[in-house]
Structure formats: C-alpha cells, structure tokens
Length: 209
Image 1 (cartoon, one colour):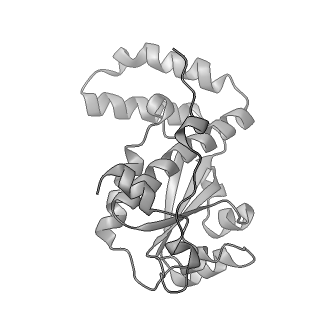
Image 2 (cartoon, rainbow, N blue to C red):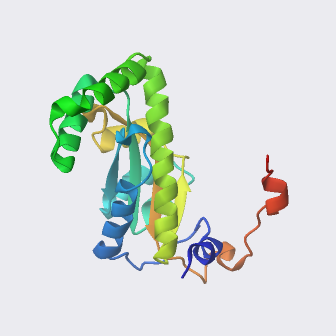
C-alpha cells in the first residue's frame, strides 16, 4: 500500500476492537518515530508505551477519550520541561561514537547548540520540545497507517495525572500528546465507513514562483 492510499484509509478511530497489535508492529512504529525529523537531532522528548489494561483505565478515568482505555497500545509523547548541558553533552558523545569521530570535531556544533538553546528560557525550550514531539507524532501516524494499524491522536487528557501515574516529572518530562493504536471496530464505529473530508488541494495550497 502506498503512502497516499494509506492516508486515505486512516481516520481517527473512535472505537477499537479487542484485537491486539503485535510487538513486531509496535517496534516498527517506534523505529519510525526514532527516525523522525528532529531539530538539531536532539530529540527532546521520550515515548512511553502503555499496554497494561488497568493502567490504561486509570489514565482514561475522567477523560472523554475512551480510546485511552480501549486501545491495544497507548503511546504517550512526553517532552522535556528543560534542556540541559548534560543532555547536549550526552548527544555529543553519541554522535562521536556513531560517526567514529573525536569529540573535538564537534566543538563548533556544541557551541552553536549551547548558544542557541540554553540561552533561551526553560519555558521556550519546553514549548520547542513539545513541538518536536508533535513532529514525531506525525511520523507515527503515517507509519501506523502504512502497517494498516488504526490510530487516534489525542490531547484531551489530564497531563498532571499522566505525569504522576507514569512517573514522568521525576525524569524531567511532561506528557504533551498521546496516540492510541489498535484495530477499528467496524461494526460499532460509525466513522469507519465515512468518506474522509479534506479541503481541495487548490484551496489548501498556494504556490509562490
């Protein structure tokens, strides 16, 4: 299935069946997230995969998004609340190792990161980190669609409760968006058979030549 056909097939699933997504498929989606575009390559977010049914129910309590509890797997995109010199140092170490180059060769890059990122307020970097997480979310949506796995991106949740139940605050993280994964319940989800409605390309896009 090509990408355009996959995106025409996907929709924000309202009701999931009991069918579980395989560990292999989840791994592929996670790998695609890891390969997603990331400003400077720093990846200032982490992914928490929730499969435990009772934990999903606790996370869903009080939310209008019932998919949190009924999906096969819930991906929680959590952004760092601040960017630190330790994170940048660790990133430099990783680059040096992966590319087999000396750390000294990365001094200019490190200086640029420190000057460009650490000079900003923590609130600015937290907002930037959250936007980076959303880029990864987009990659996950496309990856899931190409695997014929249904998904629902969601913001309507209690972030403080998520952070507490998933022990995110102690890691310097906060939940920003979630992605429910599973398989559509075609008999009970009326949206499953509806045609996707989007703007005409000519209305959505303008060209400057």
